[in-house]
Image (cartoon, rainbow, N blue to C red):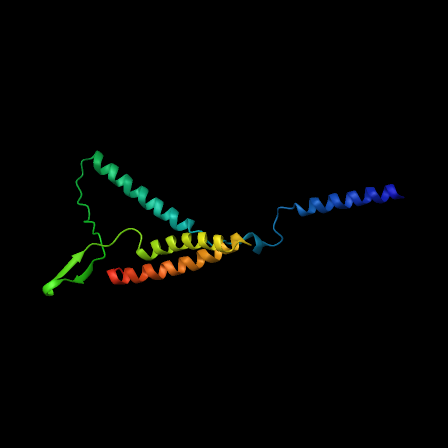
Length: 153
């Protein structure tokens, strides 16, 4: 009897596995599922097709000695104006690189982490984390005030 039950249970399990592997959708509506483009693949493919079309046109123009006038490329830049001496205004180009606030946050965070780890001898990791956060905040505040004074913000 035990042997018949074990064989019967194997047959039932095998039939359930076979039924679960059915590839046909249960209804016609399930076959018509449309997926939304969440990654932006459609936009990328359109951009790529446009660039390929433009490059093909450029190759054709070069081979056939067609002269076209390219549109003038404009470049925008931020100009900071500061009041100079005797009522004149001077212009300078956009500032590049790290701001003093960012530098202050990094330096303050590193210094605070070291000091926090040295001060808290029981748990150096927690001391380093707390010191780093406090140091980064203080360094950012000091750097931000220096940036404001220099006219960056």
